[in-house]
Image 1 (tube, one colour):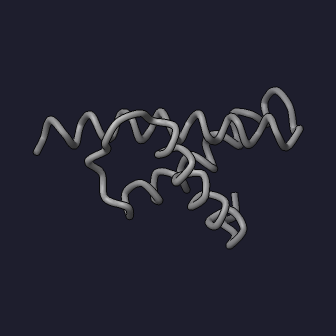
Image 2 (image 1 turned 90 degrees about the horizontal axis):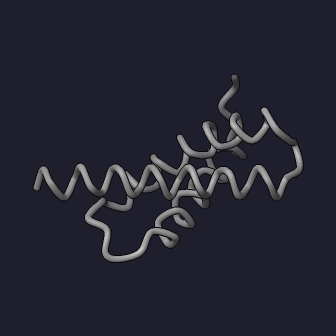
Length: 81
């Protein structure tokens, strides 16, 4: 799997959207959120491609994965701090 600039840019946007979907104040830094967005772009894209390649479905899957990652990481970060 090749990492492209397009995937990284989409990941940054997905991370921001995932953070907006999670309610309440997050304790994560912006950099961690954006990194989680890049990871979510890969994972969500892969999961969505198992079912469909329709771009809206892929985008929604990526946002859901990003929101889940932000929620889980924020919970771990808040307990740690």
